Image 1 (cartoon, one colour):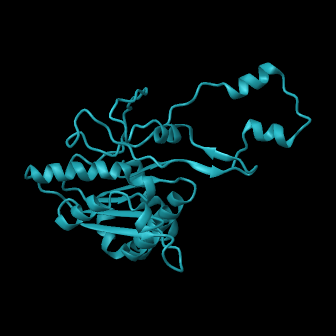
Image 2 (tube, one colour; image 1 turned 90 degrees about the vertical axis):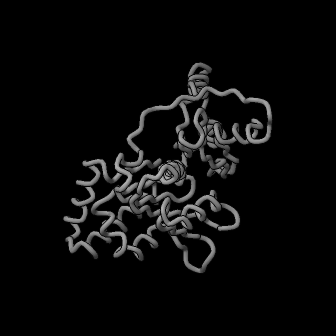
Image 3 (cartoon, one colour; image 1 turned 135 degrees about the horizontal axis):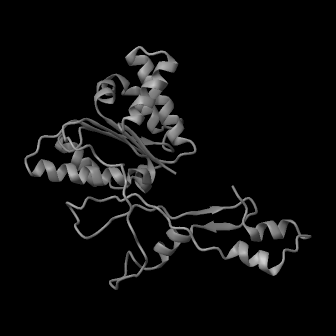
Length: 254
């Protein structure tokens, strides 16, 4: 992890930056924080939901680091106060959205807060189903540490799965409940045979951590293409590359 300027100065006592350099290092304008919208306008018109994890961890120097935006949201009273809390917010265009044809199969992979856009997808599918529109199959792979602590939106997800219309199948990986760590990629691999036809004909979405999860999920998808599509490794990579270029393998990772 990167060290803050304060930690660098504490570690290297001989450092004596000029006042101008110091102020220029600590006072740049804060960059916007981007969050995936976790709601559908069909359910909450005029409102936007976000799914935010409060950032709080220990730096290499032993200092507690708190996320600027997530900590502000936590402490602002926005969740409990009846008074409006003001903050500058804007939306931007995104290609990370459901296909226009509701019959096209969906495979959604989003552990942790990566589930955010898929909650919006499923709300939209519920709206379509209630309107009498026929829907194609939809699979969701979600992961968290502990089902009792961070299985977010559990009631909604279970209800959608029970309908067998909005959500065909829900697979949840609990990474800290067993002797072996269980992640979404393990569930993808175990369901590879059933998923393969939908991976070929549908849209595949991945949302969440880019450092490890997205790489491990991609590797699992490549293995599925090899095991159930009869591809060599290079051919499997090309298969997913072609889907990405055609807009049917989309990733929103950070």
